[in-house]
Image (spheres, rainbow, N blue to C red):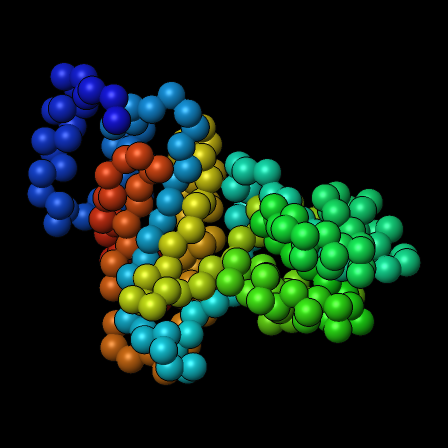
Length: 233
């Protein structure tokens, strides 16, 4: 990391108490002032949830559309035939196919962020389970990636829809935009993401659900967020 300026050192000293809680707007301002890199860093949110995902009734997983987008290019592959394939291409899919797409993936071409399939193609997609599963790319009807409406699914993926899934330690995280975004856009995305997690509270969750929330940039510090004003937290 680049050497801190005098101003940045002063700000870093303010962060000495890592127990301090910040409103979202103040945290974003601090991240901008502490930024030392030249590239457009991703703004990331991490949430510590009161769940144990080893139990099926405490799993937290789903999709959420970020209103201001993600700021990144999303590569989408679609398994479909006929009119559905044409609709997927028209919607902006990067690769569309059937058995030919399966063979392409088996050859190692897996540079995609989202894989979508029509229900009738799952017999073909199923043969890719060992390749797509570990990468989190296996189409799933619960996530809307197995659907007859591939056109809308592609548009959602390209337009800022992201998947979330809680990890073993009860932590869930995602990128909610870029440092080049306005504070308004980042706060809108933050609210949409947190709201989706709160609404996805599983039936088996006991006690406090949202324990901690932190905001950070790709190369910046993690700042703890004051959750008192977050409904349902």
